Length: 221
Image: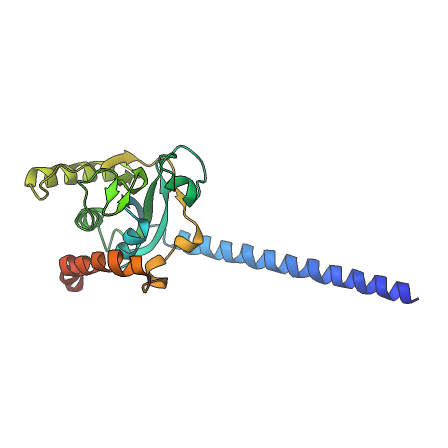
């Protein structure tokens, strides 16, 4: 009898564990479904993919642009699937650190995003932004449609012709071939780590420049 009681208790624990796992999976599925529904309800959103050095910097800037609903750090333009941060830091995979920017075109235009992009990094330094050196830090626009391609190429040409920069712009403008989200610890980095030295000495000055150049413009809107 005692063995039977122990056996039944073990079965009960197993069933409870299975039930807990099932409920957990159900919650995950429900969350993913809810997120998909939310995304479907905002299907008017468009996406821009920009590389401008360290994606922590790019993310922090574009999170502060009105009309941008989400910014996600990731990797684009490389030759292997699902790269890790360590792999892309080798400079051998061909990926660039980028941000995928989901925006409402009725509130902010792609051209405005291009303006923010080109004025908050140095697009004349090849494979480098400040002390960050390597092909993964290259300046790049990965366009998602022909309209974005046309806008980016025209904007780049106009900037070059205007003499806004003393050196030629080396920004890569290429069709988006792939995109992989970066690891969780890279997401929302500045907002969660603003006291960290890199954030204070590299990202904070970029945000100050952004506020100085665009703050009044966006406040008027």
